[in-house]
Image (cartoon, rainbow, N blue to C red):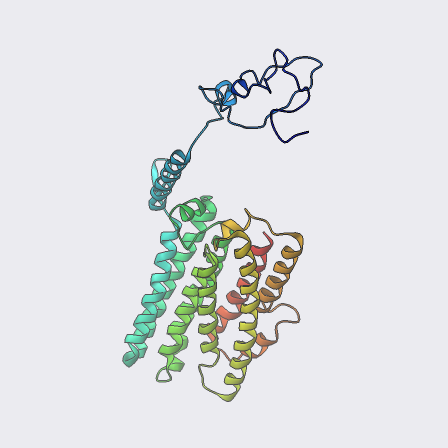
Length: 357
C-alpha cells in the first residue's frame, strides 16, 4: 500500500466514502460509513477540512474538548500562577485566613539566624548573650512546630504555589513531619543550652552556639527543599556545621573523629549527588516534582535507588554504615550531639523514603 491518501482499499471512489482520486474533495465526508466497505480512520487531524473546527469539540456534550493554541496555553499558565501567588500570601479557611506555613518556617529560620548573630556579637558578655540566644532559638523551634502542625492538620500542600512562583522550597505532609521533629528537638536543646553553656563561658561557647543555630536552620531548609540544588547546598551546610561541632574542642581525639566523619559523610554526599544527577538528566529539570513525571528505565531506576540507599544509609548511620557516629557522637558538645543523633540521622531516613516515594 502506498504511503498516500490517494491509494488505499478500495482504490476507486465510492459514494458515502472519502474521495481518494480528487484531492480537492478529500475528507468532505470522512465520517461517512458504508456497510461492507473497508475504510481508513484518520486519527486527530483536527478536521482541517471543516471551517467550524474539529467535530469532536463541536459535539462533545460536556464541552470538555477544546481546540487551543499557544496563546491560550500561556494565558492559562499565567492565570494559574497569579492564583497560586495569591494563595502564597494566605489561604482561605472558612471565613478566616490561615497563614502560609512556609511563612512560619521563615520565622523559625530567622530566629535561628538572630540567635547565631547575638551569640557572635555578644561574645564579650557570653553569659547574657548565650541565655538570650537560647530563648530565641527555642522560639524558632516553636515557629517550626506551628508550621509543621498547621500543614498536617490543615492538609496544606504548597507544591502548586512553589511551582507557580518558581520557589526553591515546598512543604508537603512528609516534610512537615520532619520540620516538626527538627523543631521539637531544637527547642528542647535550646532550652537545655541556657544553663548548660555556663561550662563553656570563656571557652568559645559562643562559637558552638553559632554552629548549633546554623545546623538547626540548615536542616529545616533542607527538608523543605523543592529542587536538587537547594537540597545539596543545605546538605553541605549541615555537613560542615556538624563537622565543626565535632572538632570544636580541638583535642586530638576530636580531630581524628572529625576527619573520619568528614571523609565518610562526603562519600555519602557524592553518591547522593550521582543519584540526583541521573534523575535531573532524565527529567531535564532540577525540580523534585519533575522526577515523577518522567520515569526512569528499570536499570537506571535500580542504579539510582542503590546510590541513594547507600548514600543516605551512611548519613542515617544504618547497620554496617554507622562507624562514623560511634566516634563523632560522644565527642560532640552535649546539646549539639542531640541534634546529630536525634535529627541529622533521621534526615538520612527521610532521603531514602523520599527516593522510594
